[in-house]
Amino acid sequence: MDMGERTLDLVFLWHMHQPDYRDCTSGEFRRPWVYLHALKDYTDMAAHLERHPKMRAVVNFVPVLLEQIDDYVEQFHTGAFRDPLLRWLLREDLSTLDLAERRQIVADCFPVNHARMVAPFPAFDHLHAMYQAASVHGDGALAYFSADYFSDLLTWFHLAWSGETERRTRPLLSELMGKARGFTSDDRARLAALIGDVVSGLLPRYRALAERG
Image 1 (cartoon, rainbow, N blue to C red):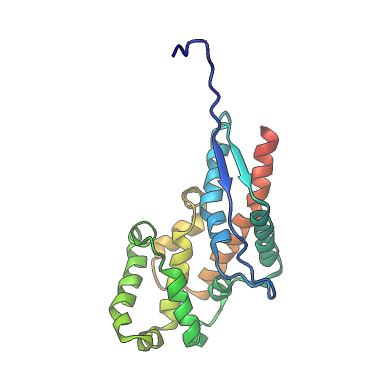
Image 2: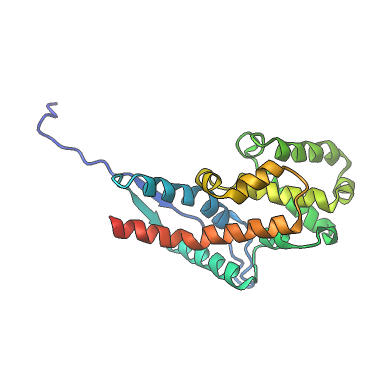
């Protein structure tokens, strides 16, 4: 077929979607994927488009995803968190964690994709190795781990979920990654504030990109 006189239009379409993770009665978030993807993938995509003004793409956010991003913005604004991972990240004294909370934290913070989300970070991988070695003893291992262990685990989980572009521009992320262990409640509070800043600024960034064309 002679294609010489034909022109083809290529459209890059990025479809951002998440189901509604909120409990319909309590409003509690059952899974953290909305704010984690906002911290990592959605913000990286915005940064790529900002860095290359001549690049054109169509980015589609489904309504229920926008609603949940706005929900998180409100949570960071008010400090009334309906996501347990964020509440744990901000809990000053992690020695008060009960067994069910400890069980849920390790379930949430050790993702299935170990090779991409844990192994690249030696300190995070060490926390996983410690858990793997102790898990043969069941719940007794969870009771054995200290508050410092859970502080480091919650911090590294969120550091691993930070976008590459954020790591290059946010000194706090490189500071905490360099520290590697022994994270304090103040470290976790500063990290939570950074997450809130990223999530709150996400939709305005895409609006500005849309207005730019």
